[in-house]
Length: 482
Image 1 (tube, rainbow, N blue to C red):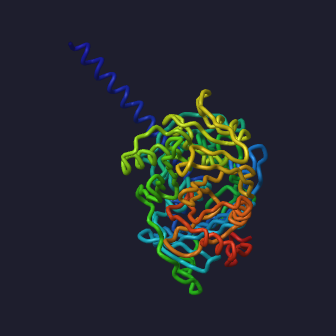
Image 2: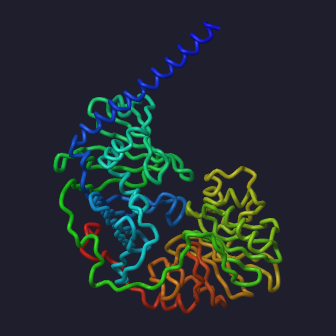
Image 3: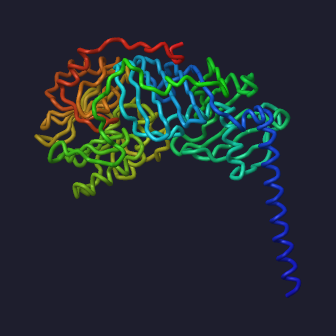
């Protein structure tokens, strides 16, 4: 008995020693990181700004699956830690036009600024980590600041080689994100790399290099971002400042903006019954349409969460028919994330032949059933039929428009949307090219359902949107406009 007790005491002591050693190792690494990034200046960070511009290959978002287009992505973030305020601005320039957004928050409420429309309105999420976590993670200095705040939750993972230099790897939590793994250069204490896992996209890598200092705090002038090893954001410009006074007007609504209309609340899963056999289901900007046709139950809109939208449709309607078809609108990866759900529900995937290889690449089982089509396909017959038409737009060379003739209804994705209950949606080049394609089809429709919004538009809404179109430019002389 004494021997057993002795062994138990020894084992517990051994585990305690290992645990203590690991904790000491974590503290040593974090102390080295803090020293490398500015010591007390970093620990007592009051404010910071991040101004970045990236070259953005359209990974999984190009006009055709076989050729990637290149766009530009700019970000401008101001965080006033002392007063709990932040401002995040973003600009994307691509083949669809210029898309500019800004949000200001005081941690309790958030306001969206639309410079191009000249309006402001309430934003649903005031948490700065929800609004700007993506920009924060592209700054190694911000990662170092967050690391020292969470030292009691950090976990040592061991050593690794990166660019022939020994790095200590350490896992750390980050608000509203899966845990991050930081690669800390053993000699310099600088963070060379950060890795996190996205449940849909896989491994995300952030690579830092070319350091400089501002106000005594170090930061990498170059940040490159990879998705599953493929470049997604390539650094062109990075300017950061630390512990400098922030202008109060940065966190105020500009006087020249007017209040926008009332937004549709999409935070909860909801269903709109368009007709007896047609439902539009979704939440937080991701929607599917379900049509109970004479060919069976048909779904269109295949973004992530399809299984949850289908379950909600079944619960609300009591319709538990097998899913017969899933119409794949186009080849972009965010619209393929629900294909596994569709196949699991028994659906045949309707698409053009050019897209089958792309869809399979996203992890479908080899036996996934496909229905290939060109130009036009009819599912069902009579008044209870669904028609699918292939069109070409600037957004996707081969795009499938779903048409329910009996309801004079079409479903499209990515070409038009508005978060507001009323008013005319703002057109871009995607809208213009889809309108031209629909005019060639000459379909008799008066209702439009979309994949990224709850609102059902009229044909007049789209016609007026097209009539109001003007080429978009970066507005406001902001840093994102550089």
